[in-house]
Image 1: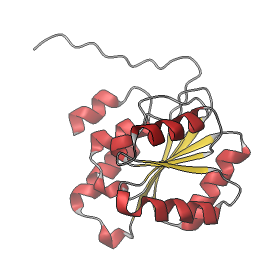
Image 2 (image 1 turned 180 degrees about the vertical axis):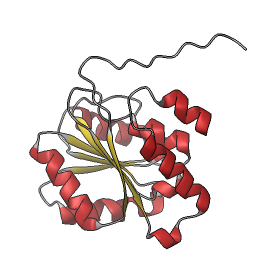
Image 3 (image 1 turned 90 degrees about the horizontal axis):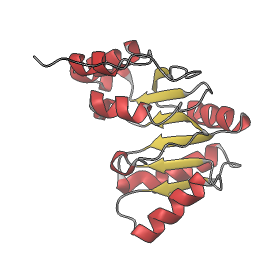
Amino acid sequence: LRDLSLITTPPADRKAVHTEIRTFDEGLIRDAVTRELDRGGQVFMVHNRVQTIDAFARMVRQQVPHARVVVAHGQMSEKELEKVMVAFLQGEADVLVTTANNQPRLFFSKNNTLLINRADRFGLGQLYQLRGRVGRSSVQAFAYLLIPPEGGLGEKAKKRLSALRQLTELGSGFKLATYD
């Protein structure tokens, strides 16, 4: 076996992302978005169905009418997509609703709350990577993994979500990879 180098020390002042697995609830979405906007941050939401992403964004707008919500997905033209991402980057939008395949590779320092709709449909590595998109500063970040009612989860999904809930400390990527 090759020698393995692990980075287990986080950058100074970095905090672990507080992760909660919760049943989908519009009130929770309203509260999470409002709380983040009240502290001057931005929200990153993943809804992985292009066919229903606009309806999901409408629901967010109804729950938090003062939030400036934008939508980004891979079926948009390059020009449209760039316009949305620049608006979010420049703080002209508060909430970015996007698909997982289109999730930004950029890190936004004000983006400290993440909501993933139907988290049970994602792989462990995907969830870990998505969670890494928030909390890139000294501000406490929050990740809400939204799932259907417990009866709707398969055994594998329960195990993946349980592993992610347990591996929240900074530098736990290698442990998660070995679990996966």
